Length: 326
Ligand code: IPE
Ligand code: IPE
Ligand code: MG
Ligand code: MG
Image (tube, rainbow, N blue to C red):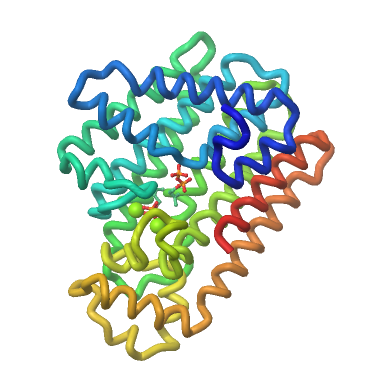
């Protein structure tokens, strides 16, 4: 893959990295295409469509950078596995959220229905773990399994909390840590531990913090749009009943939000509520929390376990998370 073929913030990292990173990410792409292909017309086409719809490939990049320039084939397999788990969870997430659009295209759920989406997600999950079933791959399997369990628990908690405007910030943050931050952490852990280099715990902390920032900003973007940037309509969280931090902070400040019945919203009403949320100033507070998480992430890299290149590349990823969304 050339650096121009990948989306920002990946582009910035690719431009800054020496040759090893683009060529290893290209290997990941090739392997992802192989894995998605060859599952017959029913599941295979949807799996391939999910893959070719793009994606920022942030998690595989984290695996590769944490594994370092001298890593072997195992790092590529781990990067593939983490991205496959990510894709599987997105396909299932779109079933849970009843989402019509992802990455600018109709979701598997919208195109082919609930049953197909569940099966495609299952396929991607199973291929992820098969990818790690190589000699000595047990620790990676255990780590990714634990992250997948956290993701499932996070998604369940989010469904349980649906339409509940009494949930507080701590509950929301707990959900974010399960459904998003944990997989970012895992990407860093798996990459580092396979390399035998020091700093796994610090990188795990780095991953958790940028994952948290990522979800906070994703939830801001759901309110602000624009659609061209997010690949989905404004207010989709409101429409599926997901109460996120922008709304939690806005609720006590805007009586019309307190009075709104989230269950009966149409798209126009969801957009109107997005404007009300934005007018309370809560979005800037959420952005501020995300920036603080990014600062904590960078602090975690201050120790001597890391090379200048590692710090530079991971710093670019951390900045990219903010830039993309601000
Ligand atoms: C989307 O993740 C799901 C969230 C955690 C908000 P990404 O925005 O990384 O998804 P792709 O892979 O780039 O589409
Ligand atoms: C993140 O939650 C999805 C997962 C971590 C599986 P969201 O529901 O906010 O993600 P988007 O907005 O659909 O990408
Ligand atoms: Mg969703
Ligand atoms: Mg979202």
